[in-house]
Amino acid sequence: MVKYNPMFPDFNSLMNSLTSQSWTAIVMIVAALIATPILFIVSSIFIDAGSVWKHLAETVLTSYITNSLLLMLGVGIGVLMIGVATAWLVTLCRFWGCDWFEWLLLLPLSAPAYLLAYTYTNMLDYYGPVQITLRSWFGWQSVNDYWFPDIRSLWGAIMMLILVLYPYVYLLARTAFLEQSICTLEASRSLGSNPWQSFFKVALPLARPAIMAGLALALMETLNDFGTVKYFGVNTFTTGIYDTWFGLGERQAAAQLAAFLMLFIFTLIILELWSRRQARYYQNSSPQTHVPRYKLTFWQAILAWFVCFVPFFGGFLAPSLYLVDLVITNAETALENNFLKLANHSLMVSVITAIAALILSLIMAYGKRLQDNFLMNASVRIAALGYAIPGSVIAVGILIPVGRLDNAIADTIEQTFNLEIGLLISGTILALIYAYLVRFLPVAFGAVESSLGKIKPSLDDAARSLGSNPSKILLKIHTPLMTGGMLTAIMLVFVDVMKELPATLVIRPFNFDTLAIRVYQYASDERLSDAAAPALAIVLVGMIPVIFLSWQIAKSRRR
Image (cartoon, rainbow, N blue to C red; front, side, top):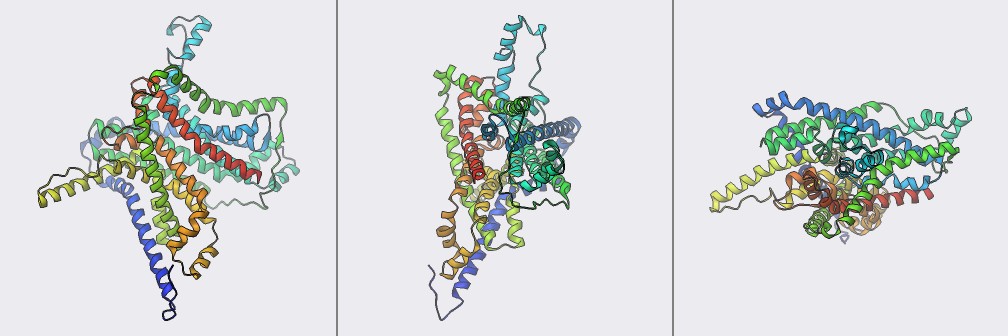
């Protein structure tokens, strides 16, 4: 503890001021490191890529744009319809199983879209259980006797993404419905509105900001998807970046494709902000009063149960049961094929990234608390851009500048000491963890900032009056009070890293595969029975934060 010196009454203030400034410098350095790949991609727009870009523009660029737009349109409509409808039903309607569906509808978040793509393809192909059952029921002999839709198509990719992304809209819409004032809803009823009219005229407009935020997250994840669209043969920007990098060997053209994709992301964010413009959404009373549920008639309850069960069944239950069946059927080989080694790789990078993300998030959130000025806010917001950027874009933005840095260091050491050291960062776990941090640091930062914001500033003032500097205040006062938020941050980043495919596929070191990579490789080789065990492991790990989140929501509602 810093001692008070009566000869220098401003000594403590001076020390606190210097320490706060050092926090500002550290936050700016972290923000610069996190933003470097993004800024590099943006700068690549002004570099001439030669004839390769012209070739891409004449051949495949149109299909990339068209398919990406159609994918966003289909997924956007689907997640809005399912997310808003299910959120309204489980929040404000009473029917059998509504309390269970509150958390069951979140479970599809635990499974990445590419797992559903592989599973449903195996279930619905000619030799899958669905078509075999249909042929046995109706006596069909061959594919010429009947027609069955091809899931490996654009509409199939849209369906897979809807099933795993609708919880973004569902979660935020349900939270918004829970927070709405009962007086507002009751006022609409007293004016003659039935439940559906109250929904469309009052509840839905008030929940619009939350719904749009969920939609924006779902669309960003749609543009980030690689495994689903690659497996289904749908050309989008993410597949184009990968093919241009590894197929054509053109890094600069891949960087410009990544920049083009970033324009889609930023346009999406700007449109969402512009759509709200000067609109404001307020409640005229406290939302703490318990919101009563509408009692549905028998047939309405059956329809509501069906509406809630279908997305849960399609997004989680059916693929999970199928994967369990494959693992049990192939029990002798399920845990072979280096399964434990792959699990160890995934656990290692996930744990390291989660801990590093927590530390950096604490630094950024506390630095913002100490110096809440324009420079600090700008630095934090720049560092938080990563989650809006697809993993394939981040991979390109890291590999090119890191490769140049490695070459410069190697050349300098060779010329100075006549030693060949090779590449120090490229192709290492360090580069992979760096990519994960750029992508998922905003996830941890959001949880930490929210938890830190609940601590009253008066505690800081009291600690400073007793001679504690900012570092000690963070470690001895804030950190114990932020245990829940810190655990949430670690858990969310851990699961996101476990599921991440595009960045891992591009940056991973040689002969360093994870569970996600092995699932992708086996599925690409049509060996889903071998991919079942690692796929099921990813789903089970992904269930941990979903169940925790469901428990938190239920606890807050009881309060």
